[in-house]
Length: 132
Length: 498
Image (tube, rainbow over all chains, first blue to last red; front, top):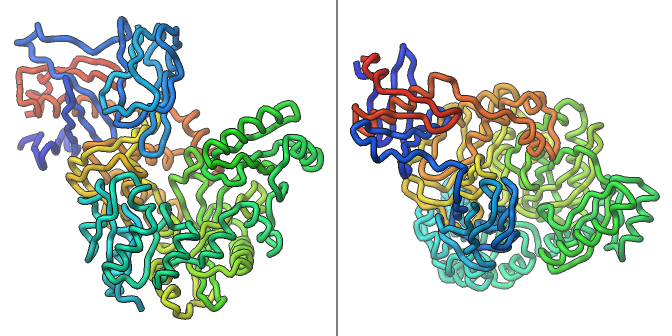
């Protein structure tokens, strides 16, 4: 009996030790996201035949980009280029779907680039700022 | 009864109204913007009319365009849903002037209840308890200081034209007053173009409990009991239940609140559906807050508990029929609760998460009601409120309703976007929630005290297994990048399972 069966596109039924699980896959760049009973796992697939392509996840060292998580409008900038910021400090406010949301610094450091402009419309994934 | 009704709304509430219209054999007319051509309410309605571009100011809020659509399709009445034009007195008046019935109260009632200070004065005149406070807009911080001398701190400054917590400040002492007044006033100016403030005594850890009303045009009105709406985020309700655990434990409290609500509404000449909101303190004393002159988002739980279709009753009284229901005909059975399912990411500060729904599994089975507007392959537009659906359940007791909601949430899966489904499961497992110790600051306190969710350990290896299987590379190795901690796992486990 197969322990893993694709039951619907992207959905697998898994039987292990007599227990039944259902897992759903979401593809994301560089890794596979597996959802089981509301829990979310990011799984990196490494092929030992292609070790050289191994990159690893971006750490807190070096430059980190702050990107727009969804389309929206920049309503306010809270920092300026060159400012020193704490980890978690608010950088700018983005409005989308009637809600204002503060984008926070992903780490402590200096704002080395601030491409966001007040009033500008941004698309998901646009780089708004960079912290180094 | 009407033969054709236009719904001046979108999303789940338009779908909800269409459902009752169909059951009553009344033709439905949907209106839609550019962003909503493929939305569920357009697909479900008998007729549909484009009313403008995606921003609601150029479509769903355009009175003339809505009325043109109603005329073109020959609609006799307009259901406004909630939000958009539903509490706009000018819209109600314009419908009547155009010879169409506005399914709601009179324009005059909407106007009288629309101003918080006017509504409060009406409540006082009708003998309903109100939170001690100034009846008029304050001239300045000095007025608030006089008030504080009489009633004490803490007090609350609120925008006269306000709502949703904007233009509102808590003040704990004389020293804080001037700065708080300045902040609240400028915020009120920014959000409502009106800097006027009023002052109230602050009720600590209050509950938000509301009474559902429905009346006909001939002065007969009944109440359908309470809904507890204390589970809020950023002053927006996210989860509601009835009966309220507090009211259920106090004999006579529901009747007292219901009678007070009816007195206030009738004093404004109110008819059709409406809701009176109360703040309730720890002792069970209740205070009139405001009246919502429309159908509420959370009306389904009242329908589950009482067995009445509120939209149907709205249509009947709007058509001029007498309300046959007497107060003694209304009975409350069991326990019901609702979760508002939003396209938002609870792991990223509840950031809105619009996008394409790539797969959808809906909860079903005993006692489950789902009022939604989403389907597999639909793209959630960025232009509107991110409410996807309302999941409501009914069961015999509060405890079994919680168990049922947890079960339904486990069945519910939306792929392609983030939702707050998992967040509700955490609240429902919380001891404080289960004990019914609710207050409007509950969610904020919960977010502070909640522990990170640790998945059962075996799920991690299952996830690695499935990922490796999925990538169809048996030589590949999978690692869990996060959470809870990076760990190597290899597909040797896969071999062991055969």
